[in-house]
Image 1 (cartoon, rainbow, N blue to C red):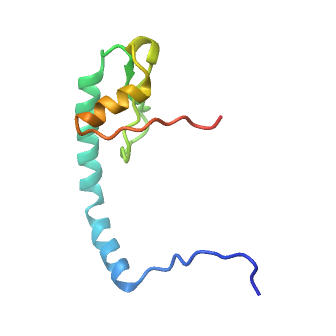
Image 2: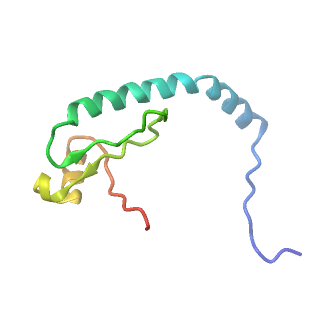
Length: 100
């Protein structure tokens, strides 16, 4: 008898079918995200206090999220204030601090 409740990650046939169809579109999705990220990077480069994500030359980023760095001292406002200002313009942004 099991003493720990687990999760049932099995998918239905319809979920698998939808997933297979979506996989065929993955390259297009990734290409569009890269295009969007390149546009964003080109337009925020040079803005003091906002550092676009660094991507090594040997890496092909898919940009499931765009992680720009806010340098509060240079930007002149806090990261949270900046995120609220973006949200007011319809752009969702959240702070993230990795655990060391």
